[in-house]
Length: 499
Image 1 (tube, rainbow, N blue to C red):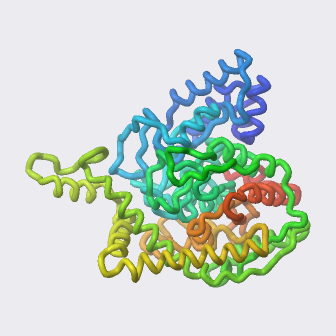
Image 2: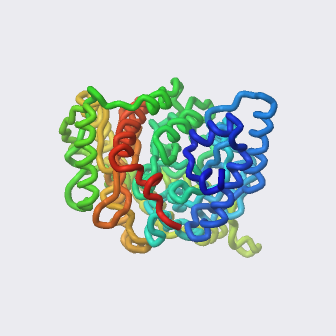
Image 3: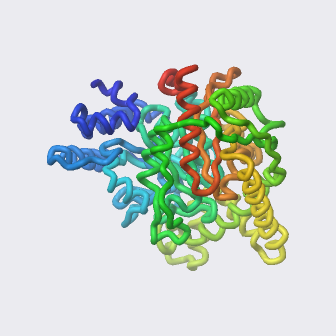
């Protein structure tokens, strides 16, 4: 097969061909490395490409097969890893100058599981600094372009991972989702992104932004590929105190047997209205009709606390960020500024943070520190946590009536790079539909549901499931994906953007 044919294969197809001997893992890896070399100067999906490491992993897979050893379901499949997970011997910057050049001495649990499954890690992808943003414009190393239109954002904070998928630089990727940073990039690039139940994927070795919200998860171009990756990375980890000690839901089985017949699907009235692009609503309404045609019962839901989710999130997340980022003091690791013998330790810390943190990170640290300060804690942070409880209660009531909830993933398609750079509130509104799920800890998925007619850019359909019912995402997602492919063709596989 030619390189151009190889990079268009799904992860499942690549794994099958490697296992059968039709392709070698080295051939597959070299094809994707060649693609990165050809297009990434324009896309800027990667911050670091580990060419030698990736080829070494690929050779090890081929040697296993030659010895007759059984290969796992994703053995030899290349993957783009968000630069927020520590990777032994490979730079991990979290998109920030404060960790520029830092080489971790250990692997995150997620990284270990990928390696144990013989997944080939191509390198580390670009992201908003410390995962704070909705566009990947906050990266200290420059923005990433959306392969559908390089003048537009690929979503955030994991825009590098989503862009790598959409530009065929990798068939699989890993993202993290604190307020929508897996699902929102998936929506605007026409890919699939899943936020598992909070605690389902270990956070050990994932650089913390907001500990009660952060969650790693799979990104892919198809629902089945996402399920295969989900199964690899999920599961209990004793190194993570928030890790759920329970079996991983049967996500791959669900993805292979997609159906919505007899399911109750909820539509929340708070997930539409002012600020939603007409084409996004049009494609969402068509998706609801599609679900109805596939045998689902549509149930209208009222979740009034969801209107407060954005405000609550932007008190809770910055508060936790102000605590987590206190460790970056210039004294232990990473950047150190002003250490010339003439400054005190306190001054070195101040100079390091001034030089190392970008504007959005500084904004959130200050907001969070204020919200946690004496005299304001109860008024702001405490009140936000009460709203969080109300949101969880609204979800609990909703899931008494329905099996899953659907909504648009984002209110608009990809906006132009720089369009919202000076308007933080407009930027924050990109995560309007995704934030409630993070606050409640539920599982959610975004998958393509067509292109908006006014700009011909991808629209995402969000599916939300109860805690530890992640398999429902894949059951519904696979059914919707199959129906869309049959009716219109896959927006990426059939109408791939041109680079």
